[in-house]
Image 1 (cartoon, rainbow, N blue to C red):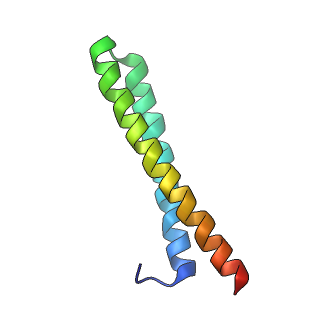
Image 2: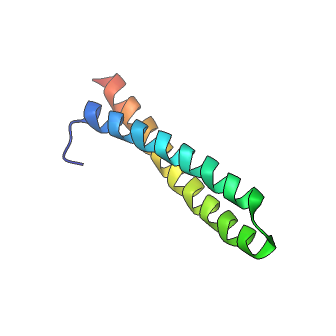
Length: 69
């Protein structure tokens, strides 16, 4: 959180793209997996979705902060 808000927003957007790519990759792995492996992949998808939601919230908060300035 030492970066200026505008730069931090850019970094959060990069992280969001990476998380979306990871979710796509995990879903592909899940579809190709057997039943036992599918559970593991699905848990990783859920964890990554949680991280994505936190990232989206941070982006919204920073956009709001920057729009007020």
